[in-house]
Image 1 (cartoon, helix red, strand yellow):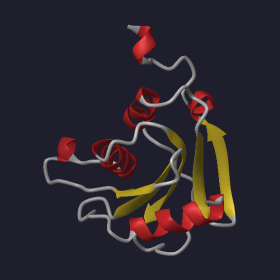
Image 2 (tube, helix red, strand yellow):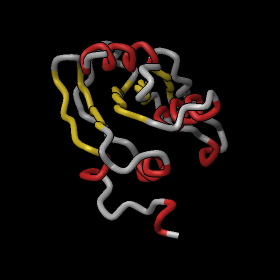
Image 3 (cartoon, one colour):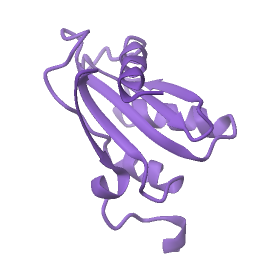
Image 4 (tube, helix red, strand yellow):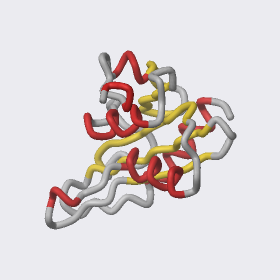
Length: 137
């Protein structure tokens, strides 16, 4: 699976977002070390704290299927008026970063994309220095 392919899958997942309040849709594609891809989109709720991020949607789908080893995640997001390519890079929120840290030593790649040809990448450890992990307990 190439990075560009994973970004394209995230773009497709973004189309499923339920965002009637913010009109800001996000799609994520999570590649596991076994080669499977799990997708997620953000899902809003009128009770805002109950909203779920695209990244955690993908993570929870993977974990519920027995996957625990993640290699890479790609995400694409922006206003609904920008359906194909977005004008900004978005990155996982703190809760999503911490959720990824539960299942990774920090070496996984995080791809923040405007499009399949325009993206930045970094490791989870770069994005979340001094991660709180199960070893921190």
